[in-house]
Amino acid sequence: MHDILAGLPLWALIAAAAISAGAGLVKGATGFAMPLIMVSTFGAIMPPETALAALILPVLVTNVAQALRQGWRAAWGSIRTYRRLIGAILVFIPVSAQFVRDIPQPVLLMLLGVPVTAFAAVQLAGRSLALTLRHRNAAEYALGAVGGLYGGVSGIWGPPVLVFLLSVHAGKQETVRVQGVVFFLGAVMLTAAHLGSGVLNATTLPLSALLVLPAAAGMWLGYRIQDRLDPVRFRRWTLVLLLLTGGNLIRRALT
Figure 1 (cartoon, one colour):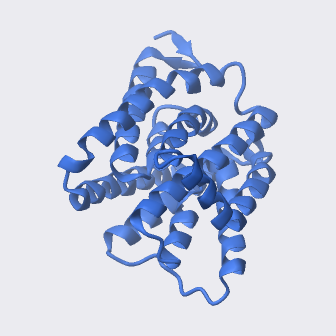
Figure 2 (cartoon, helix red, strand yellow):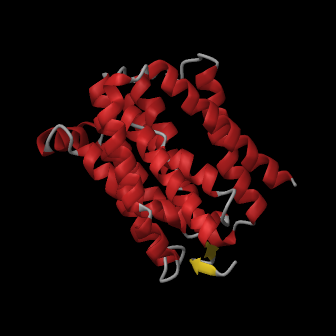
Figure 3 (cartoon, one colour):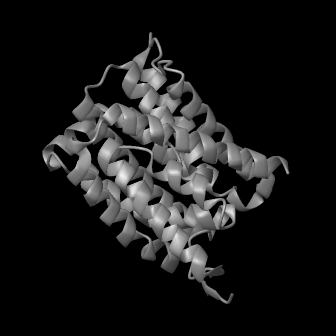
């Protein structure tokens, strides 16, 4: 079948759109996991570098809505409160983004698969990710740096952010809002970094833009059905999906 966009045939584009809609639905219903789902499942239908480029604009656009859901004042308050975490992420994303094209594909697949699998496995096991923080400021900088370094090469910096929010006992609404703010600002930096690295280019940019619509539609549907779902069960099945897709990335890296 002839390639349609970014070197992908029509069936792969349809699959990518469906994955984006599903990831958006999960994000709307739970507030997280969109880039985790997209990068881990995209890896089965497109090269890792293309998968990273494809998720950038959908993540950027959907996180605007999440960050501003309680208004810009609440979002600005979150930025001020978590400025160290956010600052470290924004500093380190462009640092690691420059090395994406220098990392061999099996290594990149492993870098994507291991944290996704570990994150899902720990959550499914019922283990808390919260840390005992004796020095909050230092922990905020450290986890932000880890998130930024990983985010630049994978598009994923959510797990370290979630770990920090759990560790400081942030409330549910605050957790969702802060994640939206951090993900949005990180996505802005990721977009700029990969426009510079060449990952987001004239070939991959249209693909990423195309996937914004199904991702946004899925997120809207997720908001609509959020109150009708059993959040515990829905989150559990989301984690099962992440565990399977992360394991598949590891399998591809090893074979």
